[in-house]
Image (cartoon, rainbow, N blue to C red; front, side):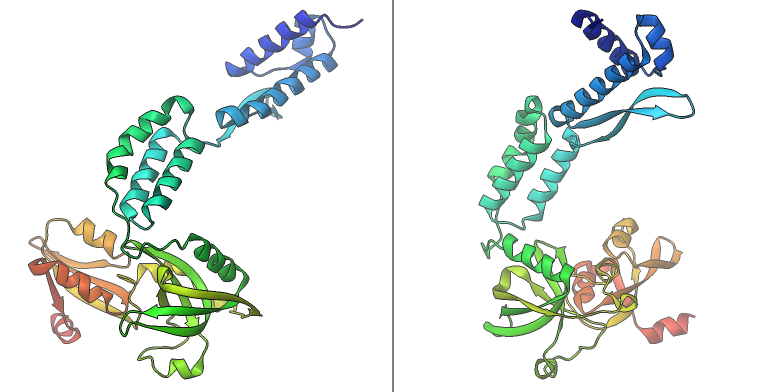
Amino acid sequence: MEEIRGDKIERVLQLYAKLADGYVIHKEEEAQRFGVNKRSIQRDIDDIRNFLDADAERTGIVNSVIYDRQEKGYRLEQLYSLRLKNSEVLALCKILLDSRAFTKEEMTEMLDKLITCCVPKSNQKLVKDLISNEEFHYVEPRHKTRFIDTMWKLGQAVRECRYVEIDYYRLKDKSVVHRKVKPVAIMFSEYYFYLTAFIDDKEVQKDFDVLNDSFPTIYRIDRIKGMKVLDERFHIPYSSRFEEGEFRKRIQFMYGGKLQKVTFKYSGLDIDAVLDRLPTAKILEEEDGVYTVQAEVFGKGIEMWLRSQGSNVELISDSERKKQL
C-alpha cells in the first residue's frame, strides 16, 4: 500500500525534532509508534541526512545523523562549522588591516570577500561598519606592488622543490641582481612577505660574509622584479629539511646572519612582551624586578630591537656573563 504523503512528512518532521532535541532514534520503536516497517524509518533517516547535507551549504554548519553502536540507534551530531563566527571574521579583518602588507585595492577586495563568504548576510553590514573607518584610512605600503600571484608561484616552487631564478632589486646599491636559488619558505614580518632561499651560484656565494648550508638568504617578495620557476629540482634530505617555524623563532626584522646567543638585562614593566617578541628567550634570573634574559637568534636584527628598548635593556657580553657565573 502506498504511503500517504502527509503522513510521511509529519513522521519525518517528528523524527527530525526528536533528533534535534538530542534523543536517539531506534528504528524498531519508531516503526511500531508510526505503524510502518523499519525500511520506511530508514528511508526517513536517509531523507533527513539528505536535507542536512543540502542545508550545510546555506548555514555553513555540517550536521549528520550517525549510527551510535553503543546506543544501538541513530543520533544527530554536529561535525564542524564551515563558516567562521562573526567575531573571528572581525579579528581576521583587523589583523589584515594592521599588517599593511597589501595595496589598498587588494586590501579592499580581500576584506569584501572575507565578509561576504564567511558572515551571514544579516550580519555583514555590522562587521563592515566595525572596520569601515580603519579601512577608509588604510595606508598602503610605499612599494605599491601587487605580488600575490608571484608569492603563489613561489609557494608552489617551495612545495615541489624546484629551483627559481629571480631578478632582485638590491637596496644597498639600488641595483637589480640575478640569482638562482633553492626556495624553502615564505614568511611574513613587519609589513612585508619574504622568500627564504639558499643561493646555488658558487661565484655569488663568495661575496657573502656569512653563507653556509645552515643559513638561508632572505628576499622581500615585493622587490622581486622578475622570476622563473625552473623544471630542475633540488633535494634536501628529510633530516636536513628547513623548518620555517624554528627559523622564525630565531630571526628578528628578517635580517639574516649567524646563529648566536644574546644575553641582556630587562628592567621594563612587561617581561611578557619581551618573551612574546623573542620566542626562544628564557629568563635566567630575576632580582628586584630586573630580569636577565637569554635568547637564540639569527643575524644582527636583534641589535635593532635591543636599541629600540632604550634604558630598559642592558646588553651583557659573554665575558660579563662568565664573571657572574
